[in-house]
Amino acid sequence: MMADKSSIPKLTLTENPPVGFHFLVTFLIGGIVPNPLDIRFQKVSGISAEIETTDIREGGENIFRHRLPNHVTYNNLVLERGMVIGSPLKAEFNTAMSSMRFTPSNVLVMLLNENSIPLSSWLFQRAYPAKWSTSDLDANANAVVIDTIELAYTRFQSLSI
Image (cartoon, rainbow, N blue to C red):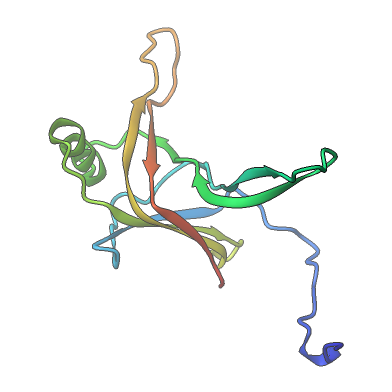
């Protein structure tokens, strides 16, 4: 059965594809309320998911195999920013690392256009700190101190805007 042409969404290509330097990261306290202090990041990476597969070889047929989906794995979400003094996020990390008490929160990453309107977004559910590192302190370099935060999470969703 062929679909009616009017029901198929029209694919439009913009003259200027989205750029990756205008974005917003928001930590949602309690899964709902945005944290207004920990929003300025200079780099986001690790937005990826992969379906691991299990290979099953069929008896008598040695020329091919069945690859069945097993489960989804995620990389850590990696956020980089200049060091912030008095950050609630840093206090939460210190609590997690010193007492192994975690308070997972949702994290929303939005790609914005030139008018700061969201083009695409990703929601990372039940994120918690897995690693925190600070750039080298070097008396021979005139550079901003960078904090790198890695978050583990249960799953992420690409949200429609």
